[in-house]
Image (cartoon, rainbow, N blue to C red; front, side, top):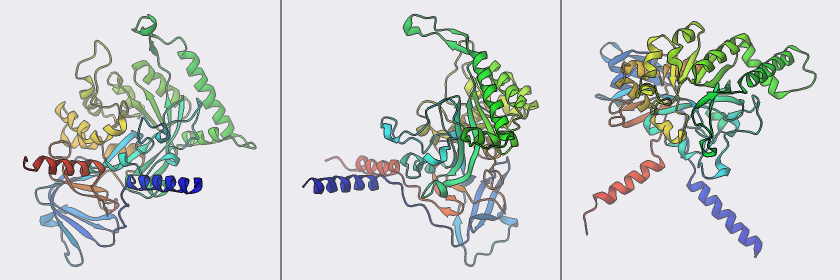
Length: 437
């Protein structure tokens, strides 16, 4: 009887798991199709009115104005998109989608590992393609993302994925693109709950923590330049930083920290550097530009941190950096970051209200992150030869009132835009529309 009871429990749990599983990934494209009549937002600042986009075998084979672009309609599906807009798939940089499903359920949280230095920890291994949270990104046009580990001084190695796959191998676009490091804080706040002054004060351990980082980088370089008779996985993972095959992503916000972090990385021979967060980067625009340092800018929809900051500083930071010629992309990290990743296009829309053009704002979530992540050869813009990872919206995709998707494609595969949220919306819309009894 106990065995039968256990079997019943197992079957019940299996049914629950299947009921919450993601939809079946879309099949490979088998027939050419063309999107005709839409306003095409290329992603590099270019806009084509009344465009024609032809897709074959997952790639864009033709793109241009309808009036001057030949189109063979035989053996081709035609999508009439007159009055609508076409965009490249939006890209979430520095995200944790697929690493956590429910914050309150510990078993579904796989963000970090124990230890201080974990460059060998690969986030892609933990990426969950069955995530219902990941699925909910697609109706807003968010189709690609960087999967990033958290915690420790060196958190681990990230990878880039597309959001419609059977498993992490299928999802991966670029594995092990970079290593993520948390720079020591130059300042700390007192513990007000213990009666300490809650204001900022210098971090007494700052120099010691930087010295420890220097030692770790030096030891890593020595190992990788040696005979490697004994395997050391963390040091081996660091080798990509020194040969230029991996990017170093440094989480740091303050002016001194950003300056010290960039100088540190350059001194260690790291050529590809991206500052993540970069709250005070507006004070260092020339420095960042001169050192060819890109920025993953902190969440736009946030509040100022310091008393003397402008009230709208988080909203206008992007314009300040873009105007200075710094390569900038937006990132959603922070409280409830996985849910808020779906708001990525609206973060970009807010930067328009504070000075950027719509074309520039679009670049923050398409071409720019693709360049930084090293996937711009296939993704980030709508160009011949690139992946047909794009979507059609009824209106402006940077405006939550009009970003209503009718079609979405990843590598030419037609995606379902149904999610748990759309199911509930339809269900309760029907309830509200029912006549009163």
